[in-house]
Image (tube, rainbow, N blue to C red; front, side, top):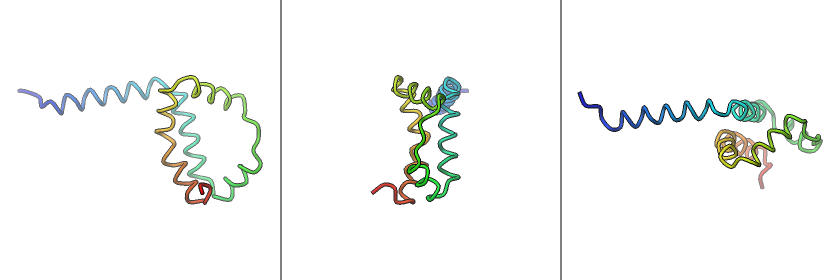
Length: 96
């Protein structure tokens, strides 16, 4: 029995996605934390946090350095968080 090319392509894609996700568990954890923050925060909370900006923690500094130094990791991070963050910022009027 011959497998259709799209089935093989699907299997290869699934393997790639699974492998790629497993390569950056720290990235996934940080991205999920950011998504959770924006999903669970009210507009007032986000505006207050922005106004009372605290210096980044050591863990936040390390995460930002990882993102600055690795373009592929940065691309993956933005792909995970962008929809949620931008949507919330638009809802809250924080993007003019």
